[in-house]
Length: 255
Image (cartoon, rainbow, N blue to C red; front, side):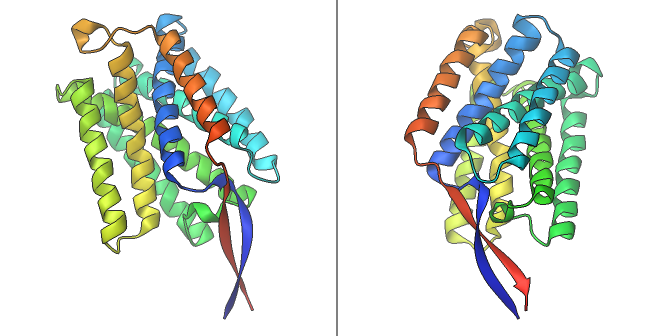
């Protein structure tokens, strides 16, 4: 028999506000990553190193924190999505793996991370992110999913000639299907969450590309730094105004 107790998790409750901020952060990750690597000519390798180091530092602070801090959490998410942008571009373009190959490799990385996490902790529910060990699995899974999302967005928009706007509509429609599955089927909500978490990344990536790519390539040709600044302000305003509560975790103990 097991007794269930409640503990405050160090990640936010999954609400509509959570998903709105998440999509804006992934869009910011695309425009911000491209601003550093392309507009400011850092290149994919140096940009990846820079954002990966920033991500590691923030994850350390996140795991050492005793409770959920909205600004710290979302800063770490932004670092993971910008690192995902630059790393995906480095592997897909600089190393010549290609969007299809990169997507397949990263899908495998995400699945392996989630399966190992489930084997080690018994569940991959975000409601259990209360210990450093689980947090490490959480942030590894998030970073792989953010990197995968970039590759998926580029694969859909470029390889299949959908263009950025059509690709964004495809990923948006896929998210609506997940919402329907959440409310009207018995499919595991945990796996639906991770599927949605992954798909919000290519949605944000294709929206970001649509905003800042040249008009000749199907974009609006908005300045990457300016788009990133606007998105950053929008994220900050939402964090400050929307309710930001930690999800309540249920942890079992053998009696």
